Image 1 (cartoon, one colour):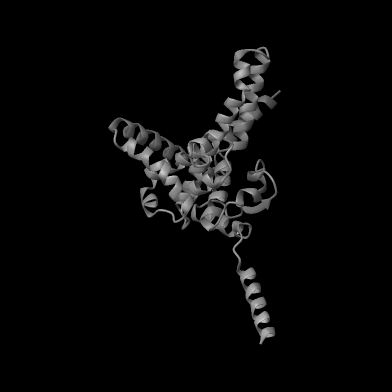
Image 2 (cartoon, rainbow, N blue to C red):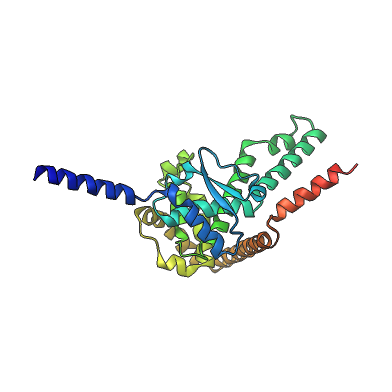
Length: 272
């Protein structure tokens, strides 16, 4: 009898192990769904990599790298979709070419001005670089949200995933704010404006409830002021139009506007 129980327990453990959900294993399926539902090239494949995902050659290789570290915090398919769609968002937004253009601009400034000039110092300051990076992350987040909303995945997972990631801000911790609160709130605001039904449907996890404790007073204050609400709606309408234009352009050409601009600049500089 004891031997039989041990055997049954072993079989049960093997079954559970075989059926265990792993974020890494879901990337290809989730990625394919995002591509198909959004009319993006289904020839694109996904590869999970260690460390930072380098997608500077993604439009050439048709391979999108997804960082294994970014998947650590994903607890379901919607959160995997948040990771993948965010990475697709960077590509649609032409992040690689944008960074190259910025670097060229810095080089041009440096070559014209002394190294210790205020403009040169500002252009290379950590504050400016961090602000640019945050704005790029926000843009990729809401592009990812647009992609997720065309699928069966819950776009609020993007908000949750952002707050699950570690923060470098000790001030957020001291103030009791969710991790990466500014970035998460930016995504939440976009969802409130562009996809209110998705927000009404909600998201069932403690991290999301914790975020709402932070977000709801901000939303209530904005809604109580006609001036603030009008400004909010204007900003969000602009963001929605920009995202729609970028996605449509990428579908048509396979590259972003930044990629086209950088390629054009290269062709000018290479002419002899």
